[in-house]
Length: 447
Figure: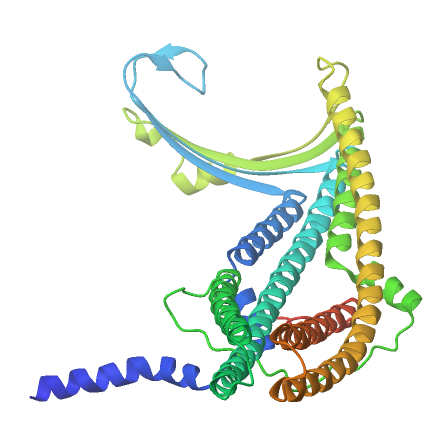
């Protein structure tokens, strides 16, 4: 009994977070934040940025002196060379040596400094690509979220139409019994009721597909329920930023364009490094060494260990220069490849700039257009509702046919769907324009 009670407590605590999350539907910002946090693409870009940071640290370290130390011990048996007389003998000797040295490049055709600069640019490019991946994931989530919202409201409209058609069908059957409606009218209403039921089933299926897509974009487990806030009670406020200012801000801060610009600088620095390999390279090195030697057959003839280490000390300083003359056209080919890569990167940056300009212009125009469509859609829904109510009253009096009622009902449903779609698209475009104007889609997290 005690074990059963403990198991029950553990089960309650494990299921409590899911229960709490089920009670609070996720907002659009919640879904975008979740998607960015769990996106595999974002995770990969985060790893790329980490590797770029490591490469930058390694490039800086390559300009620092390299230091090495060594120690060795040799015990010779039989015939060997006496290091004191440089003659062969047949004695047993012991030799112990110690060395420490350092070297560093002094000049390498500016290759080292350009490599450091290129690594720094690659780090900046990695950060821009990470931000671009975060933003792209948030945009995809926003679109999928709005699809769920659309079909949720579309189901409500379809349910409302189905309920009205069923009520109208019941009324038409009563009027048929009273002789005020024909069998054809009743059949027409039955067809409308069946069509409304079919439409409701279709929209319910579309909603489930939209939920599956939203889970996929968010990298959310398909088996777990996902409840979102579909009300969107807060209307977006129009953006009053002039288009020119909006475009300038987007061109200066868009992560895709910053990544393309950094890519151009990266290949330009690689080209400079490739040209530097034509120049001579100068390096500086120095070291210190000492050793201890003894004839094991005549130990007394040699000074002690400490004395020999002091007396045998030696050091050196060396400056060397390497002048490239011919290497099978390797340097020439490397320079040309680097130059072509730089030119391609510059063209890609130009193309990306045009793409961003087009995206901003289209989004800004769509925002204005959907805003106007939403206002007109509200008027259209009110007019369609009045028309439908009038036709419904006339149908009850036998003044219009069932076809007229069906036409008015379909017009009202289409007007409601158009208004909903224009509103949701308007909200998306408002959010995108604010994004281009500097408002992040998802709050930045320290990487």
